[in-house]
Image (tube, rainbow, N blue to C red):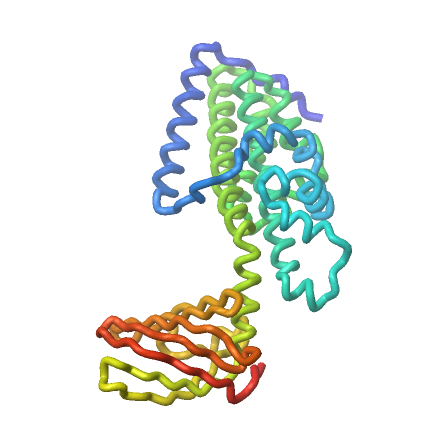
Length: 324
C-alpha cells in the first residue's frame, strides 16, 4: 500500500499563489476553447445539487445505481421531473418505449450522471489540494474501485481523458515517494491543474447533456409528427402572384429516421398537433408553408409565402401510406 502522506507540503503562501495561477490559467484556456458554445439561458443550480447529493454521487458504481439516483433525486432537482417519472415507471411496452425514445433517453441520463459524478470528484480533489489534505486526494480518486471503474467505462465522455490524466499523476511512483519541497510542489500543481481541467470539462458536459434531455418531449412530438406526415401526397399550389397559376406536385415524405430519402429543397419540418410548418430553400429562394391536417390526417390545407413575393394556397391529398 502506498504511503500518500510522504509528499512534503510547501509553505501556505507559496502554494496559495500557485493555486490561484493554475486556476486562472486553466479557466482562461477553457473559456477560449468554449467561447463559441452557448449554454441554456436558464439552468438549475448545479453546484447546489451536487453538494446536496455529494455522498450519493460519490457512491454511484453502476448504470442501475446512476439511474435510480436520477429518478429518486437528481432528476427532480434538475427540473427534469417528466424524464424521472418516465424512467421510473414500470417497464413500458416495447412499442411505446421506442416511441418515447426511452433507450436514447436512458443513455443520455447515464451520460449526465457520469458528468455530475466526475464534476463532484474533481471539486473534492481540488478542495483536498487547497486544504493540503494530501492523503485524501488518492482516497477521492481510488477509494471506491467500483465507482472509479464505472467512470472509466465512459470512454466517449468529453471529460474522460482529463480523468485519466489526473489519475496518472496521483497513481505515479513520484506522487508516493515525493519527499522534496520542490518536487512536491510540482506534483501538487500538476494534480490541481488536471483536477481543474476535469471539473471544467465535466461542468460543460453536464450543462449540455441537461439541455438535450430537457428537450426530450419536443423530439418525441417531432418524431410523432413526422410519422403522421409520412407518405405520398398530391400537392396543388395556387400562386396568386403569378395570375393564379396552379402547380401540381407529387411529394414523398420519408419515414422517421430515414435520412437517405429527403425531398429536394426541404430544410425544415415541424409538426405540432394538427399544424405543419415546412421551409424550402432552392437556389437562394425561400418558401414557407403553413398547413393543417384535416379529414383524419388524409388532407392538408394551408398557405405559403416565398422570398420572391409569391403567396397563395396549398392543398394536399394523401395518395399512399407510409412506406418503410
